[in-house]
Image (cartoon, rainbow, N blue to C red; front, side):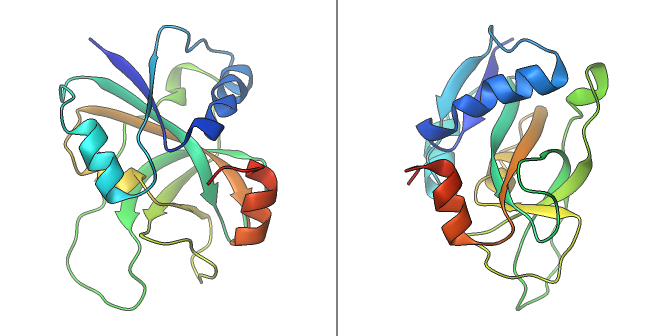
Length: 163
């Protein structure tokens, strides 16, 4: 079975060693794929993959209240559309840290744009995970590094050039 680490951008590659150190695991035998930011890039990159592949999404995420720099294991993902309500499933993820050091757990809300404010607490925001999950992979896990508290400026300072 193929195992892939999914990063949105090359600049997130340093997060792999952060996850390895925090969890006391090795990800050396996983192939790294850079998906690009957003739905279209994710779909184009991942569509050819076997749905039996094991995926671990590692990346930056914003949060209204989690401490910047913390790692969060995502338990499920949903789209964030704060202005409308319609029936849409939450997509559960496969636990990754069950065999390693446990991390705080949270829901991830994926967006098509950077989230600058939200009333949602105890969650993270990204721009890829819901689109990855909607492709139907059987084993998808995600660990997010909180990069900012809903501040585009703080995100750019931390990522030091990540577009």
